[in-house]
Image 1 (cartoon, rainbow, N blue to C red):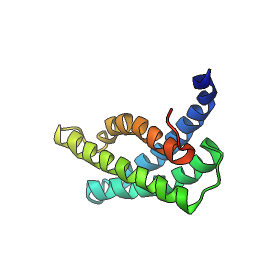
Image 2: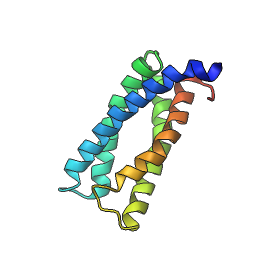
Image 3: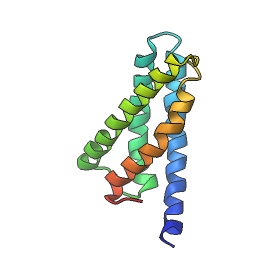
Length: 126
């Protein structure tokens, strides 16, 4: 029954995740044609990070943003960013094209991010 109560929260997380991922990928996709791939990916990550923090706080978890939560969110996202950038370079090394390489990265890193961010805002495991 507890899992059923968490379903709306997971759905809200998924909506926020889709928005943040679209922002991240959109910024990356445009910039990767003009600047180094890792820099384009990082700029996209930062822009989506800001949107993701506020949407996660208010919409997903129904909490007010605070500096403490921002630091925890930033810490979780530092780990997540390193996972993203490592996987991006791995998939590029495997031969995926620059426009397509983020797609498998997102599919691996997003579930990990959910667990980390949920812990920051809720302080408990799933």
